[in-house]
Amino acid sequence: MSVKDMDFSSTLAEMQNTGQLQLYQKLIVGTATPGINKPSTGEFVDRNSGTLYQRAWQAIGNASLDAALITSWDELHEGTNMQPDTTNGFRELTTTRAQVAAFKGVTIPPLVGTPVLQYITSAVDNQLKISI
Image (cartoon, rainbow, N blue to C red; front, side, top):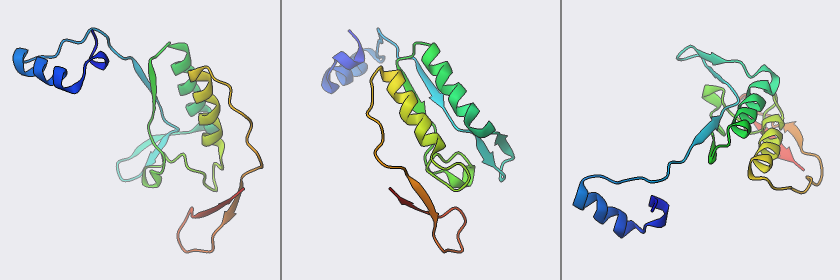
């Protein structure tokens, strides 16, 4: 029996009675990140125009993993953001959409319309208005 087959009460009772939780099935998980640029710590991994993120997804697909984690969404201060921006546009979202479908083995319908990025008049860098 695996943990996912047990309800919370049974799991808690096993841990209290034995002091451990015996796992019979392990999940193998991979992670994908588009890159990082965090000047405050000196961390930098180049996105290589989206190649880094593509290769991470290819490795996940080739490894027969149980699940995939995406490291970031809006971490602008770390440079790991995947939300649309004026530098990378929708590239990471397009990649994510295609790779998640491939990972799950499903076909997704095409997007309707073309997303367009427009600047918002603002003193804050990377602020966007998304219109479809």
